[in-house]
Image 1 (cartoon, rainbow, N blue to C red):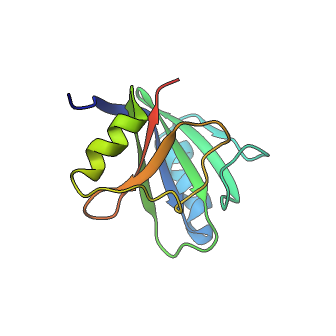
Image 2 (cartoon, rainbow, N blue to C red):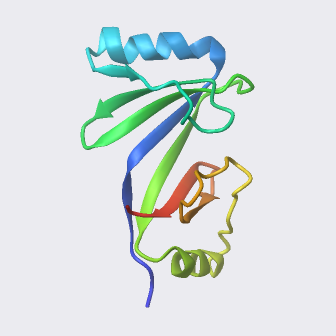
Length: 126
């Protein structure tokens, strides 16, 4: 039996320092969306500043990463069984890439990338 995958509730746009403020202003001032400063102790390792935007049924995270030279899009997938999903993905040549970013303590999941290198967090839905 194959594991079930479904889109998660989070999308992260990793942004270079030079583009962070103008990207936040685009969503806030141009599109008129509510942008919340989420910078603080709980942001991911390597992220210097973070803001969240309600983007329909998902949250778009705007993360400033100072050593990036261009933007990256990171996606989230939910599965009911992370171990089964990991085995299934490995059978298709897709292996964990957990070196991309540390997961919060206690989170069951792994980072993977799709064929063009877009990171996906595969995790159990809470």
